[in-house]
Image (cartoon, rainbow, N blue to C red):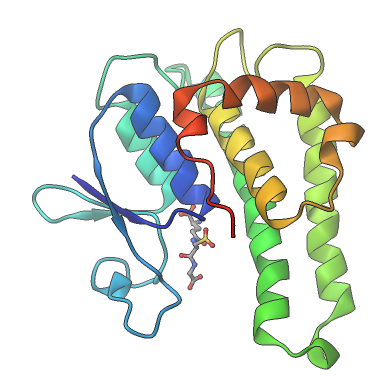
Length: 204
Ligand code: GSF
């Protein structure tokens, strides 16, 4: 199996953490999807990473499909509960965390693709508002619990940790650690794990 991705993508980080936690080996193939000569579309016509290439050549995407698939590959520490209701709860945490990344990326792309005069303040505000609201919801749902869902680490924590790491990397001005100290406690705890420490985005 080969995982096509970048070291800065939070979705790729989430998937890499899942591989490491599940102790499933995968080769990482770095791909810059923004480069003119990218070949990502040969495997994912949407032009996005992460994309997992199975040994028979089948391509699996997007990150939520990959995390779900990898969780089935080894019996080590189930990350998604088997029960349908619990499963939906954990997947909703993942959707919430991914949504923070989606909003952050849309805001950054507005800066990248439009000169400052053409940037829509309303659009940027809308995306940043989603991030703020999602952080409030994460913090409220986590409360004083040790983990996002149940009493052990699940995909919910991995997805939330990846989103928080992305904010630290791309939006250091968002003071989520002081606004939501319980999220900071969770993030610090996750960063003690080799899976998180080894996948920290490189300094720009
Ligand atoms: C999002 C992947 C994505 O936007 C998933 O895998 O969960 N829902 C998908 N990946 C970005 C890289 S990054 O900014 O994390 C990507 O490949 N963007 C290229 C593009 O053309 O949008």
